[in-house]
Image (cartoon, rainbow, N blue to C red; front, side):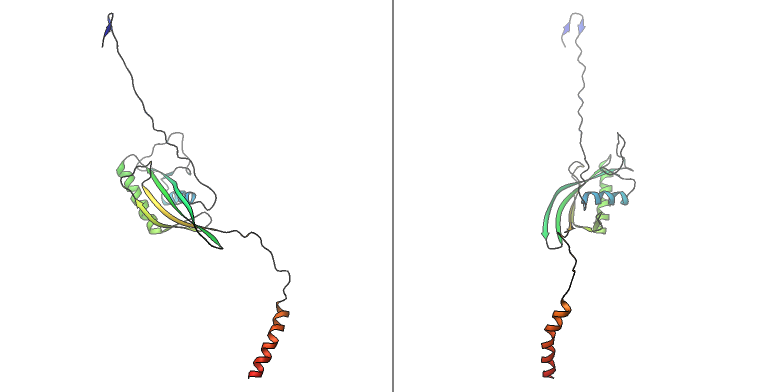
Length: 189
């Protein structure tokens, strides 16, 4: 440093970088796979903080005993349509936040095993969401998601209209149509 007069120039500085991530609630209309997984996680472990479902203070830092979990949709697509339901196939990512990698991996392994053993998660309307395939990526971070769930669920079609039968002529027409058949049967015997 060059001196100016009898003073030395001192440069003091600090560079601070913040990573700010937003994890909004992405629940949609019922039946919603994210809402169902949020409730599944809360029932699975009451200590877990479910981002988008649990009440959070203005500042929250996950711990080993109280990690945070977030479910995000990678994609959902309509797969099969029939006259009673539309089936959707989708990929949901699981993000677990804990202070150390070891803690995250333990929580993920436990959740992964429970989901595989259950095989399905009940949606809010009572219908099942089937877990078809999972992929636990040990190298992934909590931003991209460490556990991939390939799921399948159905949405029942609602009838466009409904009406009641006000009058039936079945008894009259069935008797007329059955009479010649009865006569034929009697002749044959």
